[in-house]
Image (cartoon, rainbow, N blue to C red; front, top):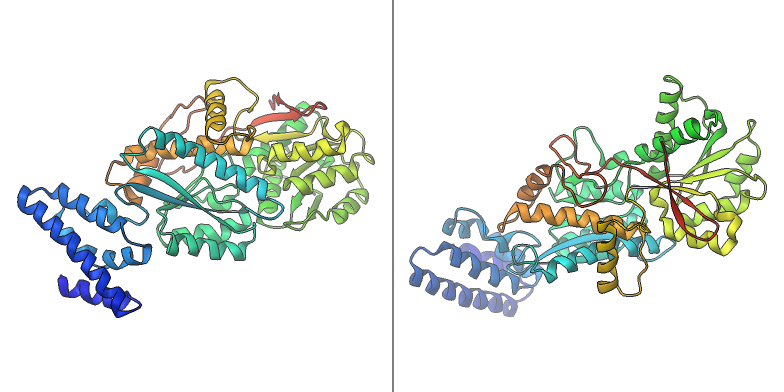
Length: 457
């Protein structure tokens, strides 16, 4: 074993001095472990702790060298020490997230980060998960898939994260989810309702918290037809020209087929490019429409959505605008407030969590935690979503036990049944369903700059 370890250290070290330093440190730690074993005879748990503490003292690259000899260390115990699990040390569990922390969608990325870290801090203040503190490492991909490939590699290879939580976007998920799956690493609560993360049967390592875009758009199309009494052909779709927009458009088409007995008809699709606010082409398409359009289902980011509303509201008085939750509700509200009350009135946004203006126990707990750990941050639907989603993950980590690894955590998530957090709907996962919630809430803007609940039934 010593020879194999020495070879691994020499091969990975950048110089003779570095390899000597690593080997001496390891020998020192091993000697301490040996003394502990000798004193306790068969105290395998003590050996586990020694090895975990030793591994946590190294940089990620050095830890990888020690992990190369991990199969030999396993002879001391019935399972690998927790310190040899990627991203898990004796004192910490590291998660990674790839977000737009710069660019036109940075507000959404920041809110995701706030929600996760708020839930982590609550858990850490209470002692962590089985004594380990939870840490989030965020990387900025600007909502551009080529950059996502770089951030995922950075988080996995350099930061040595245990799993991924809260990655933003559909187009970026086409890069990040396969990356995680190829490495059999957890990919939890991506900020997308796309089917990219909702395969049948589900991918083992991918779990979703939120309702799908198909469920959101189906709910709002049914509302427009059944409650507002609009004809299906009077409804158009304004969608981003990528996988995000495609997913929302597919949800509308599915709802139309259900309403028309299998025929989705010809749906007018208006579009714009990702990370832009150039909606002139979409406005021109709307003006050229042969049939009068009375409602637009929007599958867009908040700045593009606001720009489209600004350029069409005066020309089409009474036009109903609806948005999916991915629009980032509060940011959209702020954009429209700058334009004036008439641009806000009646704008609909479907949500995957209840109203943050409510007074349920869960909302009050979230607001109190936000005030304590993120002073100055106003309640937001996105941060609330990730506060709740992260609490579900923490519950699963507790169930996975102190010797956590990815497989145990996946099994623990699949065991979650009817988890009541005060959300208004129980959270349930299973082997055949990796989406925790299927509920959609309706909200509507008022001219005084608020969201009020909207019954979609």
